[in-house]
Length: 514
Ligand SMILES: *[C@@H]1O[C@H](CO)[C@@H](O)[C@H](O)[C@H]1NC(C)=O
Ligand SMILES: *[C@@H]1O[C@H](CO)[C@@H](O)[C@H](O)[C@H]1NC(C)=O
Ligand SMILES: *[C@@H]1O[C@H](CO)[C@@H](O)[C@H](O)[C@H]1NC(C)=O
Ligand SMILES: *[C@@H]1O[C@H](CO)[C@@H](O)[C@H](O)[C@H]1NC(C)=O
Ligand SMILES: *[C@@H]1O[C@H](CO)[C@@H](O)[C@H](O)[C@H]1NC(C)=O
Ligand SMILES: *[C@@H]1O[C@H](CO)[C@@H](O)[C@H](O)[C@H]1NC(C)=O
Image (cartoon, rainbow, N blue to C red; front, side):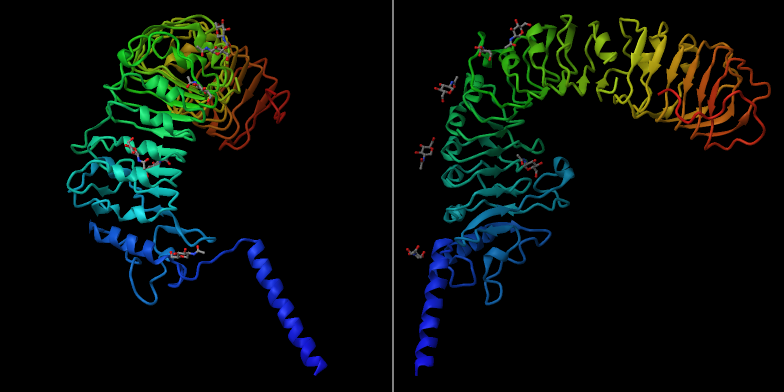
């Protein structure tokens, strides 16, 4: 009897402990909501209704979306994520990732996208945080972006990019006050012209970090700069091809709250003067700035140089003809500088002399540089894959290091003549191919480093000046007779197809040039 009572008491205590644990870790499961295997019936019904609004699902992606004893748990359906805590659907991700989507329109038989209409039944998903329907054609009859989406107030991520919508961007999106990322980039295929005359609703998205409205016509917007500038958390601003011009930009300098903005893409708008986007010069947090094909002509302001964190600066296809000396000088983090299509007479000499900084300089292949370099230390900069043609005009160069620059090309036929006066020549660690010429006696080179390439042929007759030669790790297969090179001190040649006898004062120091 005593034993039985003790046992009973223990069980009661155990149960009490268990229930208090459950409460304290706040795992509250509402039995009446989750009676059908962890999925809230009203939300399941909403999803089925969404599915019923589809007219096409070529890949049967929603095959798991079924009512039935074994399939009722909508949390297990493709593209759905539920909160473990509440059982509510918090994520709906049906994005269709097709690089070909630009070439397909909704009536294209090859398209694998979902088709049909975007059902308002989704509004039942009141805890939905993440909605990605990008690249599907859920356009309905009206084909405009439905305003009811603005009522999904829990959303923090909304991706409706490349869906083929038409017409006005609904200002109701401004009700999504929790939104952190919004991507409504237009699909350029088909008739889907989209516009907005008033984007003041954006200013209400105080948490917004990522904004992409690429290809949407914003030419009627009076002042997008103040609107965007009011978003204190904005890190990415993508407004390429939006029809923006000088008239949409305030003429005087703008005060803004953009302290964390890192990436701006305004490609394809028409600003005419490099000073038009001048408010950007004050956004010193910028790491990437794209102003390609913006109709910019004239000279960049020296204030641009305040963007010292800039890693990518693309202003190709403009008519910028000058850079105030020193403008780029403070941009020590620059990795990629795209100048294609400009009439460059600017002084970028010092950057080109920038080594081991990973700078990628993208210039027209027929660009003739207005300067003459005496030395270019470009090791580990990204120059390739083509051999940089502009080097052809650097006849006065004395030291050239283009080692490890991603060159995958044949050595151009002008290479040896152009660099005949160079004393230090380093083209090592690329994938340069071609036969070496039979005779290099006309050169002045003292140190010639060509190791680790794809060079073929014979080791040529060497110049009398040469002291150090490294041609290891190539596909050379012998020597020309009478090699010359009376001053040669170091020659590294392993990993070739060379056979035969070769006498030198020092052979294979293994560590040349360091
Ligand atoms: C449980 O869910 C039902 C149905 O949705 C709701 O009426 C009820 O208020 C919920 N109870 C709790 C404690 O949340
Ligand atoms: C939106 O979806 C597109 C296509 O699936 C994707 O490329 C893009 O990165 C997404 N945008 C964001 C902000 O995640
Ligand atoms: C949503 O936004 C629209 C337009 O900005 C507004 O008229 C409407 O009252 C808002 N709805 C809610 C629920 O806030
Ligand atoms: C910047 O933020 C402050 C504080 O939120 C606000 O008072 C001010 O109006 C904002 N400035 C701009 C230009 O949006
Ligand atoms: C530009 O930035 C400086 C330094 O942060 C600040 O003092 C100045 O007011 C800014 N100018 C404008 C117009 O925002
Ligand atoms: C920006 O650059 C200009 C001109 O070089 C300089 O006078 C100004 O102090 C700089 N502003 C900041 C905030 O660095």
